[in-house]
Length: 318
Image (cartoon, rainbow, N blue to C red; front, top):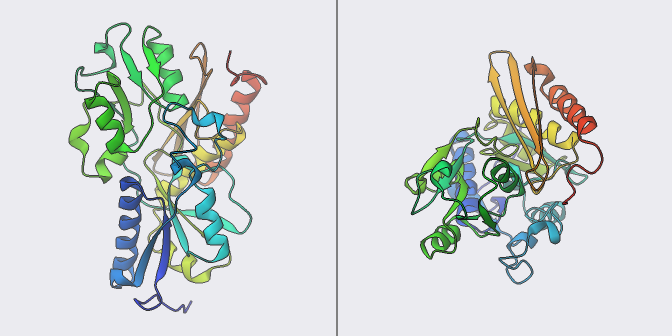
Protein backbone atom coordinates (compact mmCIF):
# COMPACT_ATOMS: atom_id res chain seq x y z
CA UNK A 1 0.00 0.00 0.00
CA UNK A 2 1.28 3.44 -0.92
CA UNK A 3 0.71 6.13 1.68
CA UNK A 4 1.96 9.67 2.03
CA UNK A 5 4.58 9.81 4.77
CA UNK A 6 4.51 12.68 7.27
CA UNK A 7 7.03 15.51 6.93
CA UNK A 8 8.14 18.39 9.17
CA UNK A 9 5.75 20.63 7.22
CA UNK A 10 2.86 18.14 7.47
CA UNK A 11 3.62 16.09 10.58
CA UNK A 12 1.77 13.13 12.04
CA UNK A 13 0.11 14.51 15.16
CA UNK A 14 0.47 12.39 18.31
CA UNK A 15 -1.98 13.11 21.14
CA UNK A 16 -1.07 12.51 24.76
CA UNK A 17 -1.64 13.65 28.31
CA UNK A 18 0.95 16.04 29.68
CA UNK A 19 2.39 14.09 32.63
CA UNK A 20 6.09 13.14 32.47
CA UNK A 21 5.16 9.47 32.06
CA UNK A 22 2.60 10.14 29.32
CA UNK A 23 5.17 12.25 27.46
CA UNK A 24 7.83 9.54 27.86
CA UNK A 25 5.42 7.08 26.26
CA UNK A 26 4.65 9.49 23.41
CA UNK A 27 8.39 10.04 22.83
CA UNK A 28 8.95 6.27 22.69
CA UNK A 29 6.16 5.95 20.12
CA UNK A 30 7.61 8.79 18.04
CA UNK A 31 11.07 7.23 18.17
CA UNK A 32 9.81 3.81 17.07
CA UNK A 33 7.82 5.28 14.18
CA UNK A 34 10.71 7.45 13.01
CA UNK A 35 13.07 4.48 13.13
CA UNK A 36 10.66 2.12 11.36
CA UNK A 37 10.21 4.48 8.41
CA UNK A 38 13.61 6.21 8.44
CA UNK A 39 12.02 9.58 9.16
CA UNK A 40 13.27 12.55 11.12
CA UNK A 41 11.48 12.98 14.46
CA UNK A 42 10.47 16.44 13.23
CA UNK A 43 7.96 14.61 11.01
CA UNK A 44 5.94 13.99 14.17
CA UNK A 45 4.29 16.58 16.40
CA UNK A 46 3.33 15.75 19.98
CA UNK A 47 0.11 17.45 21.03
CA UNK A 48 -0.53 17.66 24.80
CA UNK A 49 -4.22 17.45 25.69
CA UNK A 50 -5.62 18.04 29.17
CA UNK A 51 -8.17 15.44 30.28
CA UNK A 52 -10.81 15.44 33.00
CA UNK A 53 -8.50 13.24 35.08
CA UNK A 54 -5.83 15.95 34.91
CA UNK A 55 -8.12 18.73 36.15
CA UNK A 56 -6.81 19.39 39.64
CA UNK A 57 -9.60 21.82 40.47
CA UNK A 58 -12.29 19.25 39.70
CA UNK A 59 -10.45 16.27 41.14
CA UNK A 60 -9.23 17.12 44.62
CA UNK A 61 -6.30 15.11 45.92
CA UNK A 62 -8.43 13.41 48.57
CA UNK A 63 -11.47 12.73 46.38
CA UNK A 64 -11.74 9.14 45.03
CA UNK A 65 -11.93 8.98 41.24
CA UNK A 66 -14.95 6.69 41.45
CA UNK A 67 -16.98 9.65 42.75
CA UNK A 68 -16.35 11.62 39.56
CA UNK A 69 -17.01 8.83 37.07
CA UNK A 70 -14.27 6.38 36.30
CA UNK A 71 -14.69 5.52 32.62
CA UNK A 72 -12.82 7.77 30.21
CA UNK A 73 -11.42 10.14 32.84
CA UNK A 74 -8.00 10.06 31.18
CA UNK A 75 -9.07 9.51 27.57
CA UNK A 76 -12.25 11.34 26.52
CA UNK A 77 -10.76 14.69 25.53
CA UNK A 78 -7.96 12.98 23.62
CA UNK A 79 -10.40 10.76 21.75
CA UNK A 80 -12.64 13.75 20.96
CA UNK A 81 -9.63 15.52 19.46
CA UNK A 82 -8.90 12.51 17.25
CA UNK A 83 -12.49 12.26 16.07
CA UNK A 84 -12.34 15.96 15.13
CA UNK A 85 -9.13 15.35 13.19
CA UNK A 86 -7.00 17.55 15.47
CA UNK A 87 -4.61 14.62 16.08
CA UNK A 88 -3.86 11.47 14.08
CA UNK A 89 -2.99 8.94 16.79
CA UNK A 90 -3.16 8.85 20.59
CA UNK A 91 -0.76 7.19 23.02
CA UNK A 92 -2.21 5.74 26.21
CA UNK A 93 -1.36 3.65 29.24
CA UNK A 94 -3.60 0.74 28.25
CA UNK A 95 -4.59 0.03 31.85
CA UNK A 96 -6.35 3.43 31.87
CA UNK A 97 -8.41 2.66 28.77
CA UNK A 98 -12.13 1.79 28.81
CA UNK A 99 -12.76 -1.62 27.28
CA UNK A 100 -14.85 -0.12 24.46
CA UNK A 101 -13.65 2.61 22.11
CA UNK A 102 -15.90 5.35 20.72
CA UNK A 103 -17.38 4.60 17.31
CA UNK A 104 -14.80 5.39 14.65
CA UNK A 105 -11.73 4.71 16.81
CA UNK A 106 -9.68 1.53 17.23
CA UNK A 107 -7.09 0.43 19.77
CA UNK A 108 -5.11 -2.32 18.07
CA UNK A 109 -1.45 -1.31 18.37
CA UNK A 110 0.68 -2.11 21.40
CA UNK A 111 4.37 -1.60 22.08
CA UNK A 112 6.46 -4.30 23.79
CA UNK A 113 5.17 -4.72 27.32
CA UNK A 114 7.33 -3.56 30.22
CA UNK A 115 7.62 -5.06 33.72
CA UNK A 116 4.04 -5.82 34.82
CA UNK A 117 4.71 -5.76 38.57
CA UNK A 118 3.78 -3.14 41.15
CA UNK A 119 6.58 -1.34 42.95
CA UNK A 120 6.55 -0.88 46.72
CA UNK A 121 7.82 2.62 47.53
CA UNK A 122 8.86 3.73 51.01
CA UNK A 123 11.59 5.76 52.69
CA UNK A 124 11.08 3.80 55.92
CA UNK A 125 10.30 0.16 55.13
CA UNK A 126 11.53 -2.45 52.67
CA UNK A 127 8.35 -4.36 51.85
CA UNK A 128 4.69 -4.84 52.75
CA UNK A 129 5.62 -7.44 55.34
CA UNK A 130 7.83 -4.94 57.17
CA UNK A 131 5.02 -2.41 57.68
CA UNK A 132 3.93 -2.14 61.32
CA UNK A 133 0.24 -2.30 62.26
CA UNK A 134 -1.42 1.06 61.64
CA UNK A 135 1.13 2.18 59.06
CA UNK A 136 -0.32 4.73 56.64
CA UNK A 137 -0.48 3.46 53.05
CA UNK A 138 -1.18 5.93 50.24
CA UNK A 139 -2.98 4.67 47.12
CA UNK A 140 -5.82 5.74 44.83
CA UNK A 141 -6.16 2.32 43.18
CA UNK A 142 -9.19 0.32 44.30
CA UNK A 143 -7.44 -2.84 43.14
CA UNK A 144 -4.33 -2.22 45.24
CA UNK A 145 -6.45 -1.07 48.17
CA UNK A 146 -8.59 -4.23 48.13
CA UNK A 147 -5.61 -6.55 47.68
CA UNK A 148 -3.75 -4.88 50.54
CA UNK A 149 -6.76 -4.92 52.85
CA UNK A 150 -7.07 -8.63 52.23
CA UNK A 151 -3.48 -9.47 53.19
CA UNK A 152 -2.92 -6.66 55.75
CA UNK A 153 -6.26 -5.45 57.20
CA UNK A 154 -4.33 -3.81 60.05
CA UNK A 155 -3.02 -1.01 57.81
CA UNK A 156 -4.46 2.51 57.42
CA UNK A 157 -5.12 3.24 53.73
CA UNK A 158 -5.45 6.87 52.62
CA UNK A 159 -6.31 8.45 49.25
CA UNK A 160 -3.07 9.26 47.43
CA UNK A 161 -2.99 10.60 43.87
CA UNK A 162 -0.81 12.53 41.46
CA UNK A 163 1.87 11.74 38.92
CA UNK A 164 4.98 9.77 39.84
CA UNK A 165 6.94 12.82 40.96
CA UNK A 166 4.05 14.14 43.07
CA UNK A 167 3.62 10.83 44.87
CA UNK A 168 7.32 10.54 45.62
CA UNK A 169 7.31 14.05 47.08
CA UNK A 170 4.32 13.19 49.27
CA UNK A 171 6.21 10.18 50.63
CA UNK A 172 9.26 12.28 51.38
CA UNK A 173 7.00 14.81 53.14
CA UNK A 174 5.61 12.05 55.37
CA UNK A 175 2.04 12.12 54.05
CA UNK A 176 2.15 8.30 54.03
CA UNK A 177 4.58 5.59 55.09
CA UNK A 178 4.51 3.86 51.70
CA UNK A 179 2.79 3.80 48.35
CA UNK A 180 2.73 1.83 45.12
CA UNK A 181 3.66 2.65 41.55
CA UNK A 182 3.96 0.55 38.41
CA UNK A 183 7.45 -0.77 37.75
CA UNK A 184 6.84 -0.06 34.06
CA UNK A 185 6.31 3.65 34.67
CA UNK A 186 9.45 3.97 36.78
CA UNK A 187 11.44 2.13 34.10
CA UNK A 188 10.19 4.40 31.31
CA UNK A 189 11.01 7.48 33.37
CA UNK A 190 14.52 6.24 34.16
CA UNK A 191 13.57 6.21 37.85
CA UNK A 192 13.75 2.51 38.65
CA UNK A 193 16.06 3.32 41.56
CA UNK A 194 13.01 4.83 43.33
CA UNK A 195 11.44 1.38 43.73
CA UNK A 196 12.13 0.04 47.21
CA UNK A 197 11.16 -3.45 46.07
CA UNK A 198 9.12 -5.15 43.35
CA UNK A 199 5.95 -6.98 44.36
CA UNK A 200 5.68 -10.33 42.62
CA UNK A 201 2.44 -11.11 40.80
CA UNK A 202 1.86 -14.05 43.14
CA UNK A 203 1.47 -11.55 45.99
CA UNK A 204 -0.44 -8.80 44.16
CA UNK A 205 -1.78 -9.60 40.70
CA UNK A 206 -1.38 -6.47 38.55
CA UNK A 207 -4.00 -4.38 36.80
CA UNK A 208 -5.30 -5.47 33.42
CA UNK A 209 -2.78 -4.52 30.70
CA UNK A 210 -0.37 -2.95 33.21
CA UNK A 211 2.92 -2.07 31.53
CA UNK A 212 1.48 -1.94 27.99
CA UNK A 213 1.44 1.22 25.86
CA UNK A 214 -1.58 1.29 23.55
CA UNK A 215 -1.88 3.47 20.45
CA UNK A 216 -5.31 4.48 19.18
CA UNK A 217 -6.25 5.79 15.73
CA UNK A 218 -9.27 6.46 13.53
CA UNK A 219 -10.74 3.33 11.97
CA UNK A 220 -10.63 4.78 8.45
CA UNK A 221 -7.12 6.28 8.61
CA UNK A 222 -5.11 4.07 6.25
CA UNK A 223 -1.85 5.99 6.76
CA UNK A 224 -1.98 5.65 10.53
CA UNK A 225 -3.01 2.00 10.25
CA UNK A 226 -0.06 1.28 7.93
CA UNK A 227 2.46 3.07 10.10
CA UNK A 228 1.26 1.60 13.39
CA UNK A 229 1.36 -1.93 11.99
CA UNK A 230 5.13 -1.55 11.66
CA UNK A 231 5.61 -1.01 15.41
CA UNK A 232 2.94 -3.35 16.79
CA UNK A 233 4.23 -6.06 19.14
CA UNK A 234 2.17 -9.19 18.43
CA UNK A 235 2.75 -11.00 21.73
CA UNK A 236 1.76 -7.96 23.76
CA UNK A 237 -1.29 -7.61 21.53
CA UNK A 238 -2.46 -11.17 22.33
CA UNK A 239 -1.91 -10.66 26.05
CA UNK A 240 -3.76 -7.34 26.15
CA UNK A 241 -6.61 -8.75 24.05
CA UNK A 242 -7.04 -11.63 26.53
CA UNK A 243 -6.89 -9.47 29.66
CA UNK A 244 -9.18 -6.75 28.33
CA UNK A 245 -11.74 -9.39 27.27
CA UNK A 246 -11.69 -10.62 30.87
CA UNK A 247 -12.25 -7.06 32.11
CA UNK A 248 -14.99 -6.39 29.55
CA UNK A 249 -16.90 -9.52 30.57
CA UNK A 250 -16.93 -8.20 34.14
CA UNK A 251 -17.95 -4.72 32.97
CA UNK A 252 -14.95 -3.40 34.85
CA UNK A 253 -12.82 -0.29 34.58
CA UNK A 254 -9.48 0.99 35.82
CA UNK A 255 -11.29 1.92 39.04
CA UNK A 256 -12.75 -1.53 39.80
CA UNK A 257 -10.94 -4.12 41.98
CA UNK A 258 -10.09 -6.43 39.08
CA UNK A 259 -6.66 -7.89 38.32
CA UNK A 260 -5.42 -10.12 35.53
CA UNK A 261 -2.18 -11.29 33.98
CA UNK A 262 -1.61 -13.42 30.91
CA UNK A 263 1.58 -15.14 29.81
CA UNK A 264 2.38 -16.50 26.34
CA UNK A 265 4.20 -19.81 26.08
CA UNK A 266 4.73 -20.77 22.44
CA UNK A 267 1.28 -21.09 20.85
CA UNK A 268 -0.49 -21.12 24.23
CA UNK A 269 -1.71 -18.31 26.45
CA UNK A 270 -2.26 -18.70 30.20
CA UNK A 271 -4.49 -16.22 32.06
CA UNK A 272 -4.88 -15.66 35.79
CA UNK A 273 -7.65 -13.37 36.97
CA UNK A 274 -8.95 -12.03 40.27
CA UNK A 275 -11.85 -9.91 41.46
CA UNK A 276 -12.14 -8.50 44.97
CA UNK A 277 -14.76 -6.84 47.10
CA UNK A 278 -13.75 -3.18 47.53
CA UNK A 279 -13.18 -3.70 51.27
CA UNK A 280 -10.92 -6.69 50.66
CA UNK A 281 -13.23 -9.04 52.56
CA UNK A 282 -13.47 -11.54 49.70
CA UNK A 283 -11.70 -12.40 46.49
CA UNK A 284 -12.51 -14.81 43.68
CA UNK A 285 -9.77 -16.17 41.44
CA UNK A 286 -9.64 -18.07 38.20
CA UNK A 287 -7.13 -19.27 35.63
CA UNK A 288 -7.07 -21.12 32.37
CA UNK A 289 -5.19 -21.79 29.14
CA UNK A 290 -6.06 -21.77 25.46
CA UNK A 291 -4.50 -21.60 22.04
CA UNK A 292 -3.04 -18.17 21.34
CA UNK A 293 -5.57 -17.73 18.55
CA UNK A 294 -8.36 -18.02 21.14
CA UNK A 295 -6.90 -15.42 23.54
CA UNK A 296 -9.97 -13.18 23.46
CA UNK A 297 -12.36 -16.09 23.97
CA UNK A 298 -10.32 -17.30 26.96
CA UNK A 299 -10.51 -13.92 28.67
CA UNK A 300 -14.22 -13.57 28.01
CA UNK A 301 -14.99 -17.09 29.25
CA UNK A 302 -13.06 -16.73 32.50
CA UNK A 303 -14.59 -13.32 33.13
CA UNK A 304 -18.11 -14.61 32.56
CA UNK A 305 -17.49 -17.55 34.91
CA UNK A 306 -16.32 -15.21 37.69
CA UNK A 307 -19.28 -12.91 37.09
CA UNK A 308 -21.68 -15.78 37.73
CA UNK A 309 -19.83 -16.74 40.93
CA UNK A 310 -19.71 -13.15 42.18
CA UNK A 311 -23.36 -12.16 41.88
CA UNK A 312 -24.81 -8.73 41.20
CA UNK A 313 -23.53 -6.76 44.20
CA UNK A 314 -19.98 -8.07 44.48
CA UNK A 315 -18.31 -4.72 43.68
CA UNK A 316 -20.64 -2.62 45.86
CA UNK A 317 -19.10 -0.90 48.89
CA UNK A 318 -20.40 -2.29 52.16
